Image 1 (tube, rainbow, N blue to C red):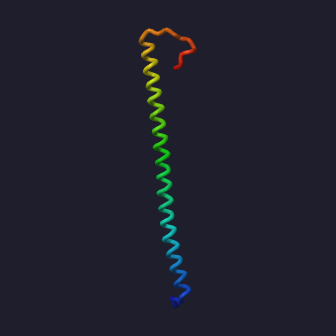
Image 2: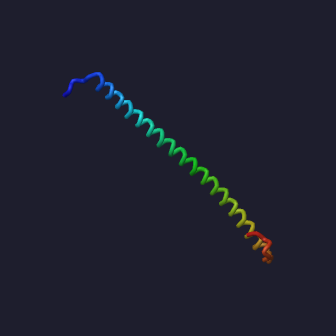
Image 3: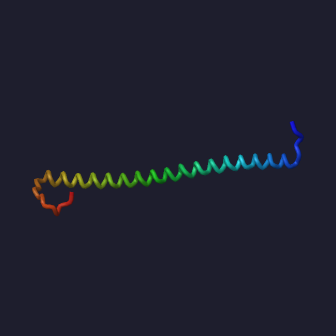
Length: 79
């Protein structure tokens, strides 16, 4: 349509390079986001597992005390 001059060609190359860089940076940002989200999920899951195990252990101990005929209802026992 219009004759290409060196300035137009250089600008077109810069534009193409900027688009490639933007795609690359966007892909890296999305990857970094999901890696971070996965790390948060894994920490949360590990913490939940520890709490569930602790709760189960405490429940087992309480049930064992009750099954053993313990009638101690003082406030010094922890539930």
